Length: 170
Picture 1 (spheres, rainbow, N blue to C red):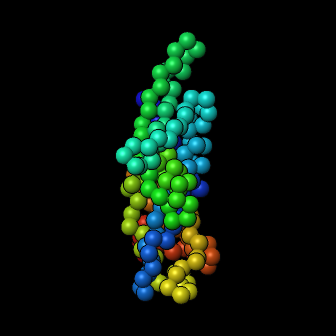
Picture 2 (picture 1 turned 60 degrees about the vertical axis):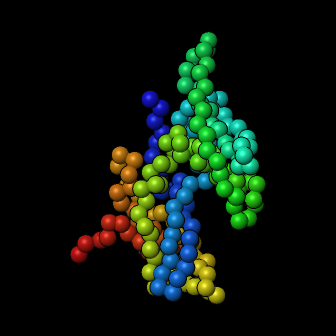
Picture 3 (picture 1 turned 180 degrees about the horizontal axis):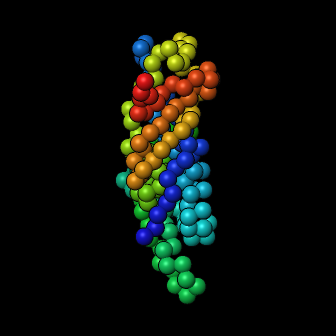
């Protein structure tokens, strides 16, 4: 059975989903470059491929992996998913999203689905005109059996730890 490594802290990015007066919600995600790197290191760059296609007006990506890997035999297995448009580059964002979702179907980064609700209190970031421009990063993460069991998030703009799960005990 094909197994992909767990994401490490440098593979995961943080994005502000929404800002309220009392705090903000942070989301964890991986980008397409992470998927490509993990595919390359796990199956080799010559043993995977991607193809984008349209179905009923939606852009899909199928990711194929050569699971036979012998000189005289190739057996390609494909997994597909569709994407959604991004706010900045509509078509590119949709293509990238469909690729990342197809990679989730292979198991790459599936542990992100177990991420906790990340609430950053208002004293851990700065708001200007109702928006937060601070940058956050995963400081440390522990993944066991494809589940996030511990994580800390740092506000790198302010140089402070903004979130810890499980909470520190005294």
